[in-house]
Length: 159
Image (cartoon, rainbow, N blue to C red):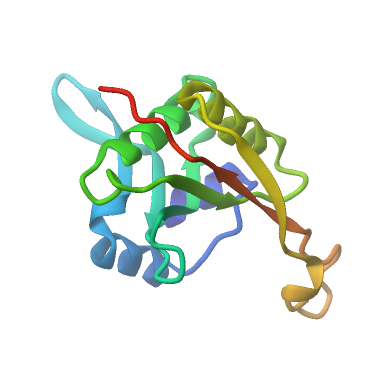
């Protein structure tokens, strides 16, 4: 996951340890997609890391979703999010949430298209602003705002 994040050139990389912890402690809400060749598992091409926030147990919060550049445009991100919502750990969630950087139009379109597919509204709410993120010396520009995309209430379809 750490390598895939770096390959996207868009996502903010976290430590490899953070990805290992997320996948271990939130394994029921973290999914991956691999390329399989001749029935043999291959390279990781997409993932979603998510969890149920204790303060908002009705929600599934997507911490990060990534698709390798060579696999973009195939609907993998959308399929991962829809599969996430079908998992037992998310089956009773009424909302899907994520923060999306204001310049990340691909992710914004992804969450809005998932909302349309689910027949649910998508609210975009102020959440984290530039002032919430420390700016290391020499870093320009500062971290951009990340509004919250809140999809729901979810209308479940039989899948």
